[in-house]
Every structure is written in C-alpha cells, then in structure tokens.
Image 1 (cartoon, rainbow, N blue to C red):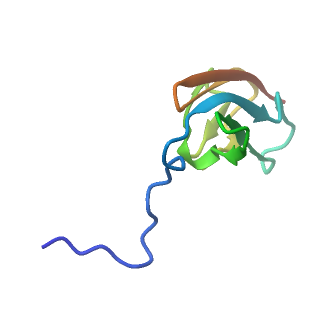
Image 2: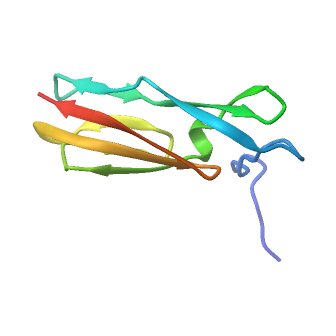
Image 3: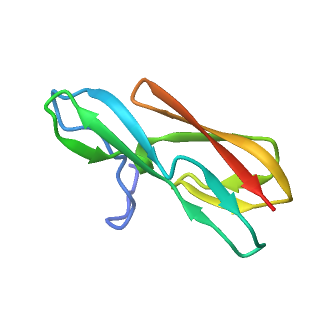
Length: 102
C-alpha cells in the first residue's frame, strides 16, 4: 500500500471541463542586478469560460543561456552575468521572456 502524507502537495489541475485560451507571463522580462536578487514569475491563464487562473505551479520552465536558474515554482535566481531566455510551457501554450543578469 502506498502512503501519501496529508501534507503532501496534490498536483494542480484546471477546473473540470475548462481549457486555457491564452496565457500571460508577468513580468514580461527579468533583470537581476545582484547575487541576492530574484524574481517570481506569475503565469496567468484565461480559460474558455473567461475566468482568469494562476497557472504558475502547473507550468514547465526551461532557461537557456546559463545566466540564471529557475525553480519549479517559477522563482528565477542569478547564476552568472549574462543573458538568456526563459521558456514557459503550460496547458498547450508556450511563451518566452528575456532574462538578464548584471
């Protein structure tokens, strides 16, 4: 028998019968200027019902360029000076934003 803690996070999902029509990434670009700086990404989705939902924790993130790292929760932290692109995939939609670390 598998044991799952009551405190274990459950996977998030869309409300039954809904689909994502569009997504918006906030902020539209990231500029980190110190080794302790970070930025939290918010992925806002618009459903076929017109409702807006937070898709941040459902998204998959990929950061090219090596200038920063991104957590599964959408927190971007600097790794080294440089530029990169953060690609976000969620619910069949993709978006990308520039990331700069100075």
